[in-house]
Length: 351
Image (cartoon, rainbow, N blue to C red; front, side, top):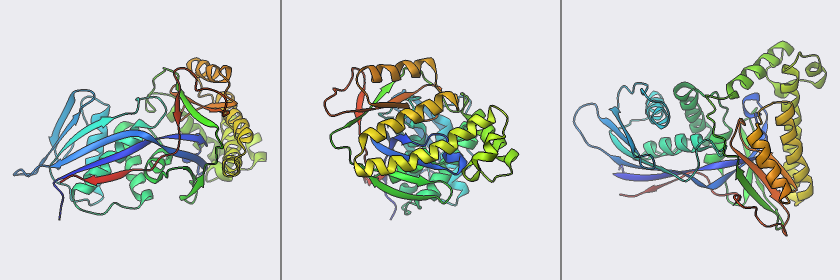
């Protein structure tokens, strides 16, 4: 029996380490947050092909379109996610009906905490739940959400954000291998140390930043080496690449090593080792991948000056937030927020 009304919540994420590795068949170590996006979906029984009525309550904006043929919206932003979710689910054979979608969120947009993936996950899980069907496997649904961002929003993302939102577990990070698409929980033994985020104040969209350029550079580097992806490239081959491709590939290779070492560190409670890895990851993102900005560097310096043992930018870069690791005796700096691993996406039947 199909429900009349459901609520779906999808969390944002913090990526401990493993930036720009997902679309290079690499490794990453994210965890889900308590904050995220909520979609309440109510079934609309109307004659004809049916309609979708979507309302972004936080923005006091709305969008209405025919269910059977969602066109691309005149105005980009959240509307592209809604229309893309409907189109991609229909293309995957989900028997959608007319619905009213009420969207709210507790994640700042463009802060590097994956508000976009949380939106796509919340929309798709709500729409599927409203049909009465079971949710598909995490990897399958993550691919649908990724296509929404690729084809409707214009951001060439990998699957990191979507999988982190779907598969998050409380008190654990998720080790993701993007070559095999396997996920493994990694219990976090922080031993009193604290993780905090600090917003740089610089907003960016992945589609409008240099994010897509970095993806193209990684593809070009792999092609020049005759490799399927940067995951399998050798350091000898990478060293022969021209710049900036050499630097991009060196970051990815080094980041994969750092992810494995970070997983060992958080399982064993070796927080000084994790702090060193966060610092090394940021320096690589800044110097080799060139995705940091003055605002991000200023935010990172604020955390370090306040006593953080390690700090790095989060997400695709070009703005957003910085993650810091604090010893137990260090107070949370002004403007920063303490974060920790939370549960992944979930759906509640309301009626």
